[in-house]
View 1: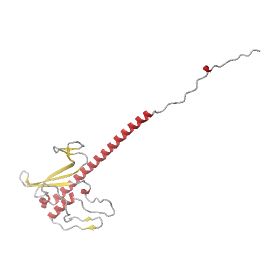
View 2: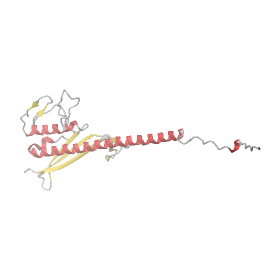
View 3: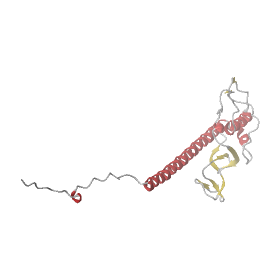
View 4: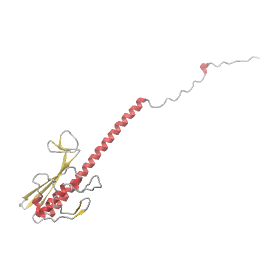
Length: 216
């Protein structure tokens, strides 16, 4: 009986499957980290600038409210109009004048002092431009007046009598300035709303004016 023998050559054996080598190389990982870092830094900067502009808008709204409040006080106390004039300089916050309105010192209620028209004018200026000085011993900070929320407020009031077509009215100009972190005033006195190298003073100013007649 004849046996047929077969020999399988190694060259005819099926090739073994190569292991899966898919994935990220070190260079790809580093590039991804670099791009992500740049994006996060840009996002953090944008959030910081947004916070600064939001705070600046809050200060601007607060300053406008302070001038509106003082305007109403002047109209109600027009008999002492000239007593509101600050002689072209910013009002100086020294010792508190007579308090013409009741207030809380932080520890107790304090009744209002008795005031005439000129004393009331001095109190109105002080109440608008200066910190109330109230302090709560249980708090780290005490904010009791609008000036406590505005950085370094500077109030100027200018009264000009005998104006108008018949010279019977008085012009009142109120100007309020405060420190800002973004923008300010350039060398030409123009208002700048972004940080540039031409900024001379980092302050912002708003003004309002109105006229009063004797019958007011």
